[in-house]
Length: 137
Image (cartoon, rainbow, N blue to C red):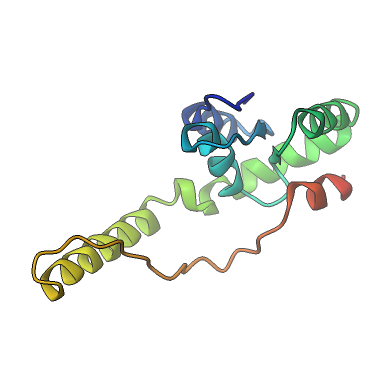
């Protein structure tokens, strides 16, 4: 996913579903970060998000130079795919229900006013950087 002007979370979802490691370049606008955001929600260490063209190139070259590491990452993606929040439709549905109920409660409490609703993250997955994951290859 090459960003930084436009991104494709659908392309990233297809990569993850097919157990193909992804590299994304996060841009400044939301539409340029969506692919990177999707990758960050997948298995730690299986996908990489760059913040610059140089870092994007570094990730791509480093991955291409390590076929054994790519094979391990593909196995990890295949194994973790069903546990990944993105493909966990039951958890997604519960989260959506929580969000809708919280939005409705906020709407009622504020007398019909619209407000941002922020829910606590229930996922206990560790947040690791792409650089940490690449260093472990």
